[in-house]
Length: 509
Image 1 (cartoon, rainbow, N blue to C red):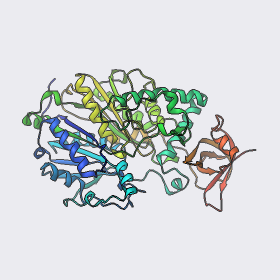
Image 2: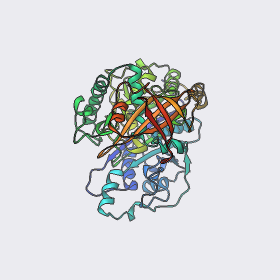
Image 3: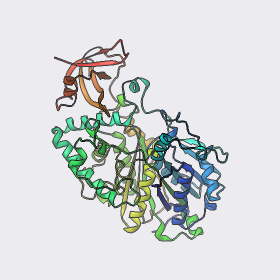
Image 4: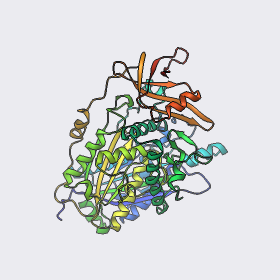
């Protein structure tokens, strides 16, 4: 196929998983992945004109106060380590969608003639960090570095409002179980049947992780092991046990090199290194958790899937390889529904093993999934691979369609504003922060600590149909009702608790 000089192409990928006894900070982690990516592309750092770093989890709200030094300018440190003199430096706001979003952005810039070679990298190091903090490790070599001015890119909005956060809608381990409960109720299955299906699919994820040399956990587990609560698999947020939660305490880095076809030709990049982005899209669902259309679907994933596949002339049935963002089972289930993909599709839903097993390194997982997808596609020339990405609470979404076969003609994408318009056409229900009186549960969960339940969370509707969030008492009867199959749709009452200042839901007698 004929390609244009400005056709963007991925030419190099690199990953590094640190298993050493001593903790490793972000700069050496990224350096190892970046060097691997440049070597994979057969190019040197001098060709890089743009460096984009995925934001570190330690800089997210809630962790920014950790007493460890920060790099002065992470992209400048990467540039110094590879001998690059880029004209553009970027670092992202928080979001698991950001690696694919950066690829989409880089390809737009290359197609427009604004860049010839973009390096995308990121690292997460909470595994070594937490153990090092317990042991009193000296972190002096983790910060500093060269000065530089990096553009902060992406959507800076927090994932929830202060009111939502006060009631527990500020952590993924709290919010995603609410989607799962709504999904189960929507499908009308009982909990054992519903969880058995999840177990089957995620057991397949563990098998894939066992074949991924960069996976954090390579242990193959049975469906029963994954979904059964036990001493090594405690409940986190009902119905999710530990083995069904994204694992963030990892030490991993990844990097991608994206060039114009002109630059790749000039640098002598071998044809067998080249993987092309055939389609891509970005959008967000109604932003705050209480504003969602419902808790079992994602209009944004549907829109992103449509505008990734259709302009490239493909349907979901054409795809050979998938990596569906998998922080929690409901993220995979909802994405499959939105894309028209069977949750138990025999093609499989991950090339890495997923965030709970390959490792869910904060914002940077999708850099790893793209790198792994590139490797798999090279081994199957001409095949198609779809990568999806998700930030916050099924909030921000990006996708990319990849193949070793060049896309014919000039590269273009559907404008992001057009994709977002499909989502904005579906507003959520009215909400209230001060519900009072009769109420009905829309979805609910029980959050557990190491010693047992610590919080009951209810999202419901008041008598006027307005959506609210509330917490519950933790007595045995209430907890049993929250986890029962008739919790969704159950009646009760809601009011502001004067002692805590939070909304409190009580089941009807």
